[in-house]
Image (cartoon, rainbow, N blue to C red; front, side, top):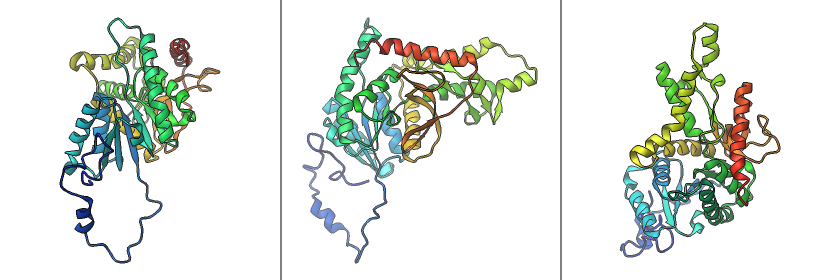
Length: 358
């Protein structure tokens, strides 16, 4: 990792002053190579910006660093002292991490040239406050965040993590002016991981061998796609039917309910969620920036898919992701019940969304 002189942003968060190590020393430390060729023009410098350095934002930042996903990481927050402290804390781990330039500022100019902007900032709900009023406050907050990000990084992908993620992703899309494929919500990517884990425990297999999706709203109206679940490539429900192995629908519903309530349980026990969403978002960042074209259930503009017609609403669908953002939505065969539940989930989001003045 570069020394502290080259790794920091403009005041008040710069560490370059007062250290006694000027740039002249760095210039004389190494003897240059004669007739050296310039760096390859095709070599890519990957930059990720994280907006909001709360528990979720820092879990994401830490995971990005440990997984070596960026050459440069920019942090932005409205609280200068906390921001500086978080930046220093990460920089002090330089000897234990892959080489990454870490910068931080309250000024969005520090995010310039980002390939991916991850937004975790959001207003917290006040006791007795309605969901609509909370959304209004978050919309005001996003009106201060999204335009400068779009200005400084016009070719970036926006990844929204703040909740309620589906509506805030829609708001970010409207505020940014970006094409919808470059504005994505973390959606049910983590819900689906929890779902796969529950099924894996139930069947005593590795969760990585379970293919299963939660789609729709990241919330109470989410939809478990039971008809699409497979383990090792074997469709589970059709296998049980063919083998005449009985199963109860109530068991399936209990597993889905446990998935929905997982976050509430963690929040009740430790006050917030952080590590799982950190890994979830890092997996999305890797797929996007390394053009891996993996399928993730993330919040995308759902208009035109699965019977959601003439409705501009963001909700989670199994989408192929790559360097261009959302490359397509998988044409998964849904039962009529699942398709209706998905449309109902879209209507749940729309009911709230239509009350906002966007």
